[in-house]
View 1 (cartoon, one colour):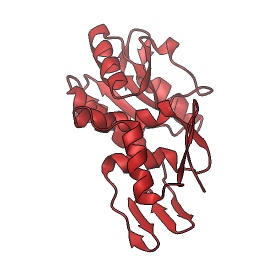
View 2: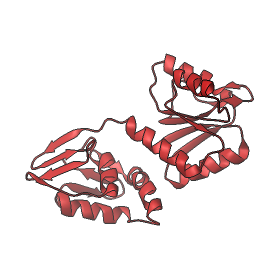
View 3: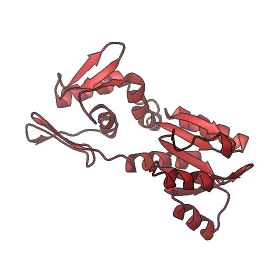
View 4: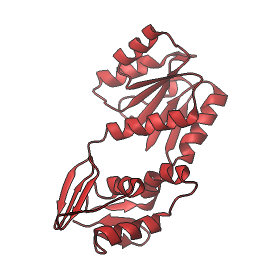
Length: 215
């Protein structure tokens, strides 16, 4: 996921960038409103400070919403009055985090917003049925138990199936779970587990390119 961070506090901005990148996300950090991308090149998700040297982060948010952009936006601000939160939400913010905040909570909110904004499909592939949104899998009509890491991988690999997914994109999907489990399992191990559960031929390897979930 590519994230825009609009924050002029150097120490806080650096900490947020390091925490997000450690979880496998790409971050574009802007310290001024004028440096932020416009509606023509929006990020996947944005973290916006409000009090910036050259303006208010809500101005950028309003411009995005006026242009019809629905990317998830988490407001980061020292403004802790209820009226300020209401103003931010009415301007189009999806969530609000008051400074100072815990970096793990910030990451959890970012990932929750990202999941919420992505509709996940129901797939019928031969004898295999996958409901990626409800986390239900059936093979030959029988339920298949999958772990949270396996579902995170499938959400990228199989939506939609038939395309080659770069390794970096799959590593990014696993990164938050690997951190939570002090390392967790490698991508190769997770692919092997999915093949055992869903069928050995269901996931093909494309050397130097990535993996493909076959239709």
